[in-house]
Image (cartoon, rainbow, N blue to C red; front, top):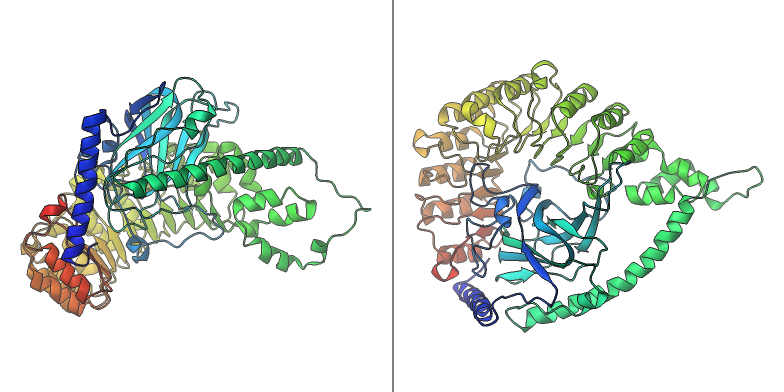
Length: 630
């Protein structure tokens, strides 16, 4: 974000130059992205799956579906509702009280969100073009699905190939761009592309206008990848970056050659049988105490343990020790794991305490009996994460509830295939401290049964649950009466909430630290709800009041007076607050690190720049559509 008006002017000039350049090239060439002979370009036909979106389920603003179809923004740059936006950005969500702790022994895996897009034809991919129109730089991986020929029906496996990946996002200049990194050649045609995102390094929400697949109908020659027409960038810096990426691509080809040789050796080693005889010589590992060897192995991730287990009998026995799998995070391997692999893990899962199966199912169907067998093999599972598992339906949910009676944390976010949650009415879990139901179809009665059965609940996410809207106030009443230990509540985009229900929260949940009531239009400041919230919930560290048009100065002054631990405040879209009340919050809430005043009527970019200068420890956000008018 700009720290002075001079910075704003410089940014505006860069954006305007880039936008104008794209317009001129399109007028002259007919397209800002040239094609070579024999290549075909397809726009996204349909978004088939995604992990999160900023927009609501019943809207067309800021939703994942906007990634498909014709471009509607590019080459303009700014915050436009027609774009595709995921829900989070920056480090602040991970710093909030409701965040979860990372898994031990997780490999380098930076993806936090994903979007899958289908195309109308199968093409051999030559280039994937992602049109970024606000805060570019979130894409960290691009994959293609071999849905036609790369499947193993016996194992229920679907093949995904990584076309391009990077360890972490690379900072990009603030201007529109077509992101099309050099991709790996694959020997199959595809009509399904998946992009994975990491927005934690970004300064604000990243917005995408569209995605296009460039390819051929027949397997392309290697020369095509080395002689791709350069993309039209706004200046030499981008072109230079493209050359660097091309050099890296050539280096990767050499690396892939070595990897293929290594892979062949691994396959041959895998065919060898591990045997031991009394005549075999001892090695140095046999002299190590088992405890020390286990300590060394505890630093390895799952992939490394599996490979090491193939080297000798001694290491296999140690690598299969269930104590090494107390934290089992399978999400990084979603593209490789099917039900077949889960069965092979059963013998090592006895001591698992935290299990992350998020995103699984994309590499092949996982039968509910397989999942039940896996969960039944675990003695006392405490944490189960199933975010965005499309294979999880009502039958699977029954298996989960019956097999995992000791759960303290359950994440079902994005499990949209579950149509019936009535199992909670008769066999509810009773030890939950954390529950994530984002975008699920749970309705009121099972929700209230869950609340009644879990008085120790501390963190609840029921954001964007459309089936809860008709009885939202009754559910809030149950939360207030049954879950007085609540520390975090996310009811973002839960419409129909009024002070009638919200009062049960601020009158009963005094331990509240993390609250998101963004886009809940029926909460009116005139009822005194926000002032009462500040007075009764003095431990608040994060409060998101996004798009509440009724917020007033008295509400901000109440937070400044009663919430000294406040760290994050979002008042985007407020119409009735002035700079004096915001300044009071900045001065009195000395722990504040994040403040979003985007689209607040009466708050100028000049105000934001002054505050950034006076309070350098606070990240002050002010978004824009047209930077020249900000």
